[in-house]
Image (cartoon, rainbow, N blue to C red; front, side, top):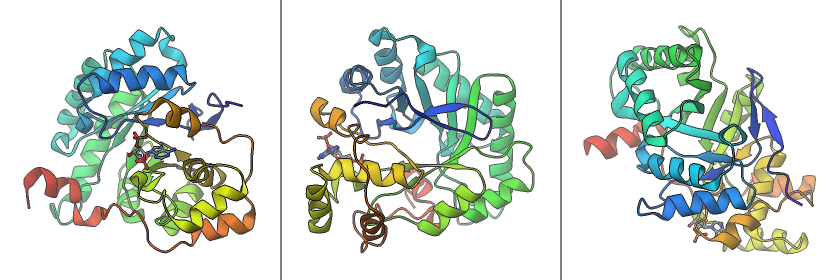
Amino acid sequence: MNKLTETFTLSNGVEIPVIGYGTWQTPHDGTTKECVKMALKAGYRHIDTAFAYGNEDEVGLGIKESGIPREEIFVTTKHWITDRGYEETIAAVEKSLELLGLDYIDLYLIHWPCVEKVTEDWKKVNAETWRGFEKMYKDGKIKAIGVSNFEKKHIEALYESCEIKPMVNQLEFHPGYTQLENIRWNQNEGILVEAWSPLGSGAVLKDETLNAIAKKYNKNVGQICVKFALQNGILPLPKSTNEGRMASNAEVFDFEISAEDMETLMNMPLLGFSGFVPEEAPADALVNGN
Ligand code: A2P
C-alpha cells in the first residue's frame, strides 16, 4: 500500500507529503533527472533538493518530463551560505526558481545557520536572510519557509526579529543519532521536523540490533528507519538511486513499530553520525577551507 500522498500540515496550513525523496549527492550527469522521474513514478510527490547540491536544474527537468502536474508535486530547495543577507536571499530565490524552471517553490530552507564561529553578528546575518525569506513568502514565490540544522538558540534568536516563524527544521535524524531534545523542542514550537539521512547515509544498515528488529516485522532496515521517523512525527527524506530501494523505502504503511522497539531505536549507541555540528559551522568550513 502506498500512501505517499498523505500529508503533514505545516503551521501555515500548507500540506506536505509525508515522505520526501532526497537528492543530496545524487550526481549531476543525468542521474538526478532520471531518479526524480523514477521516484515520481514510484509514487513520491515530494522532492528535496538544495542549491548546494548542484542538481536543481535536473530536479526541474525530471518533474517536467514526468508529465505530472506541477501542483501535485511538493518541491523543497535550500538557501546556501554564500547568499546570506536580504538582497542576496532574494536573488538566491530567483536563481533557484530559474534553475528549477518553476514559478514557485513549495518550501525554502536556510541550509545552515550563520553561527558565532563565523561572525559575532551571526544573529543579525540570520535575521537579514530571514527577512528575505519573509519577503519572497509574502510575494508568493515560496509557499512555506523554514530552516535546516538550526539548534534551539538559533531559532530563538530568529524569534527576536521575525514576523513569520519557521514552519520546518530539517535535521540529521536516524537510529544512532536522534538529537531528541532539539527535536522535541521544535515539535513543541509547532515546527515540523524533517529527517535528513534517515538511513544514516547507509551506515546503519548492517547494524545487528536494527536487523533483528527489521526481521521481526518482516521488513528491511531502510523501512524500519523510515517508519521510525514517521512514528516520531518526523518527515523522512530517504534517498536512493536504485528503483527497487526507492520503492521499498516507501512501503512502510502496513506495519507499526512497537513502543518497546521505538525505545530501543531511540536509544541506540552513536552510529552513522555525519559529524556535522552546526556551531562548528561545517558548511562554512567546507566553503572557506578553514
Ligand atoms: P543507493 O542509492 O545505492 O540505494 P540516506 O537516505 O540516509 O542518506 O541513505 C542513503 C544511502 O543509503 C545511499 O547510499 C543509498 O544507496 C542507500 N540506500 C537507500 N535505501 C536503501 C535501502 N533500502 N537498503 C540499502 N541501502 C539503501
